[in-house]
Structure formats: structure tokens, C-alpha cells
Image 1 (tube, one colour):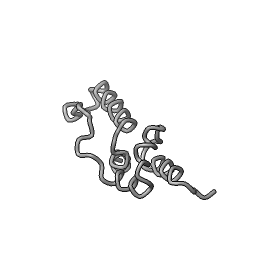
Image 2: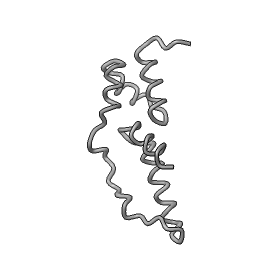
Image 3: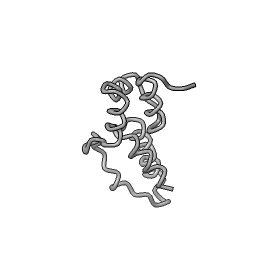
Image 4: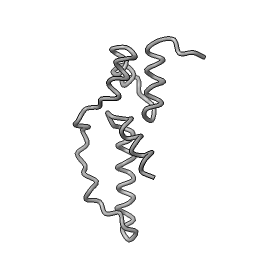
Length: 95
């Protein structure tokens, strides 16, 4: 089935770039049309709004709780980011 409307295209784009999208995100990214949605996704804001600094979390095997905390932090970031492509690419290249 071909995507016909800018809204359908934007929703599809957001599903591919991130982990899905809420109605509010589809409205935000799609408000200027499909091309504007692509532009917004490829030029994310410098300040992503995350205050937690993961650099202080040690990842050695003896500190499993810290690793679990880091994992929770990363999953939360993936779900709430304003820059889904950057986070998805970080996850892709992490392994």
C-alpha cells in the first residue's frame, strides 16, 4: 500500500527513525509537511533535554547495579529523545 498523505509519510518516517511516535510527535514533525519532517529529524536540537550524565556510571562487572542503571537510562533516552535518529544510530554502532 502506497503512502499517500504527508501525515502517513511522516508517521512512517518516525517509525523508521525512532521507536515509534505519539500523535503529538506526528503533529509536531509533520506540521510543515514531509520535507520539513525530514529536515527536523536530520538536524536535531543541540540540547536534547537530558540532565543525567552517564559518564559517572561505572560499567565494570562487579557493579551490575550500575550497568542496570545505565541500561534503564539508555532505554528511557531512546523512548523520550528529540533526536531519535541519533539515538538509534548510537545503538546500532554500539555493538
